[in-house]
Length: 369
Image 1 (cartoon, rainbow, N blue to C red):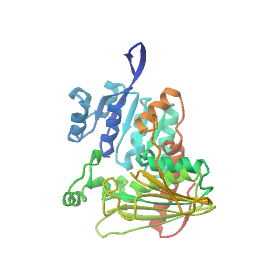
Image 2: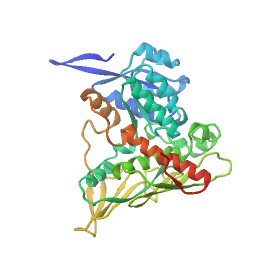
Image 3: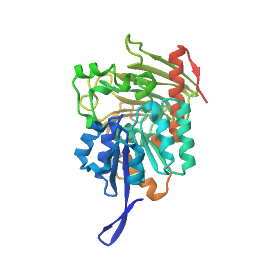
Image 4: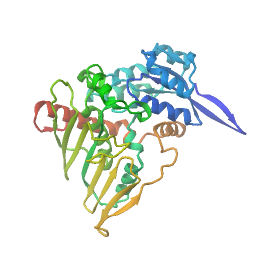
């Protein structure tokens, strides 16, 4: 499996990584992180549509003999230690079950799954394989949100009683890998055929972005799950999925709100829209405002009720991106913690599952078990 490379007098392992299925544009971002990691190498990429691999192959110098349209052949020939999976949400469980047969470690790009049943299939498959699975949520690597969690765990704002989340972008068809933007007219034309707008494929802003909010929300709440969930979605004529959802979760200590939006005024990585994308966390002794991509967070405490700006933490390896983190877990034999932990993600998936049902039934529902 992993090759051994000589570095001066010290030998270290090169982790062999294959990227399979390019449905999600984040595959390009993940492969870039592999390409830049000194202890990792891209040994293969695979997709049923070869044209979707062209940019990655060019960007990272992946030769033709490492590009596959037969997914099984990719794994059999390249013998990876780690497989990156970016299929459409509705196929996550199918892919994880299939890949688990090869006894490889797996990174699944967010969200965890389209349904709680699918999430449980993924957990069972990886438990049987004895290998590690992590679910990557890009927001988990944003310095403001990591800084906010550090302050929460240090008790800076007391016990968390509310999490307010608003996030999204101009729409999944408005950008590709590395956040390269796409013309709005072209994006609108693609809506009728893109999997993002197909209910059976796990499309919709709720499925795309609610998992972010409730996964990090569960992290901020110390792993606590809510009691019941209420969700409403827009119902745009001509679309079978939502572009806007609002979920209210009732916890023992109060209410938290999670809002998703395809169609923000601007993309937050270019210019923050209003409302700002990110989190406001309310504790019983203070508050934190943590917004995507910003260099500071705003904190209120009992000692400083007027509030103050705090520079975000500088993230250090191996906590700068999911590839670093997964390789660290494998090298140290550690278990994932925080947003990438699939068991924490299952708690969040319960909230998503209940929200989907609540929106369909138009009523408040108890959290599914």
